[in-house]
Image 1 (tube, rainbow, N blue to C red):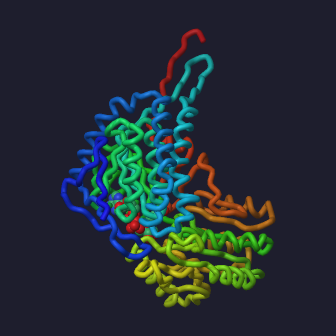
Image 2 (cartoon, helix red, strand yellow):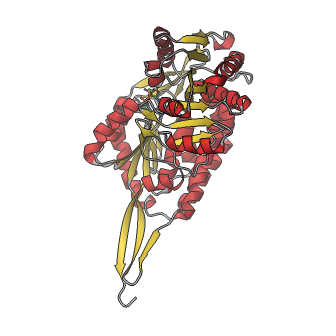
Image 3 (cartoon, protein in one colour):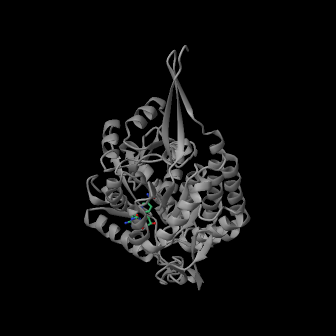
Length: 483
Ligand code: TXE
């Protein structure tokens, strides 16, 4: 049994409660580690350490912070294999995926924001003949970073790296469902020699540790990725204190496939957008809208590809899909599939728990599922499922496609498939979503703004947008006589 520790003021320590939560591997349902069940007392201790550390870190040179972040990135790369295996074991996702995406991206996040910091500078607005304005960007102080379980180290570092680079001290709270790589990161940070208290990692439940961060009067900003209901709870708590909030929440993203699209590519990428990471990515395309003239052909080809997907133990290099993250989450996905059937949905493939057997015995697997014959206003098409489940719906006109695509309360991402360049631009601009891909999916440039419209969130992260969030702007206006 592996016992994880909090990382507070540069020390590894037990939670104030002395209590631990069991953590299982979704691949086989076996409990293999214990996670600190921390509470407000641990958050307070972390806050005191971070506030002390901020006296120096907040005034440190960019070069110093750059070097520290690059050392953390080096440390992640040195322990690459261990991190990739830990992430796969903790989350259930295939090992090839953690090796190709999660862990490379975690070190890339540190490198990206370390170098971006060197290029982030004050803006100047000259009022000719009168004055010069320059806008300073000050770090905020001690900030909270709360991350989810679907891309554990990837999203944790996506928040922590820019927060630190901008000169803040951080209290990070990883998901209690997938705490392992965040714990390994605390070891890497200690090895890298980051000054004590600059980064603190407090493990535990959202209702205790996350809530204590949102409630803390000394913490002026929270960056959160997770469910929409949790985001609303954080906003309710933080708003009266006027905290800065960056909320990256759920999605119900459309893939819009027009008859003139390259169908080979549209089918290939729809398999990825529906089932990569077991469908547990906020960007996944869960509503596939297809122009009626190619609907049957597209559907039959997509179903044929989905049936070929190998589901199994994450360590098997041949599997495309591993386990979903937890037993309760698997049960939620299966219940949503039952609801879809009651709503009149026809299950084209999957629709049930998968039992790959062998070393995957006891694990939480769901077969890739495609459903058609549902109205767009039913709950299956309106509520986020966050599993390997997508629906197919035909449309007749561009207007109808847009109306269907924009009909949910979410607005995170969408993809448009067409060879008509005019239509591509037109439809992209009219989609109510934070970002749109044309003839691709999940192609990411870390400099671009990332975030959603409507109930998919508030604010944007990525590139200098992250620095805007993690700093406070201060304009200095200097009158110049005789200019
Ligand atoms: O996420 P939670 P859950 C969606 C997805 C999923 C649903 C619920 O639809 O089925 O959300 O998942 C912390 N104050 N997404 O319940 O609870 C929690 O400990 C502060 C989409 O697992 O939102 C964890 O660290 N923090 C998503 C983090 O919030 C609180 C990714 C996220 O967990 C808290 C994950 C509180 N009161 C789920 N309660 C995406 N956008 O990618 C919990 N937390």
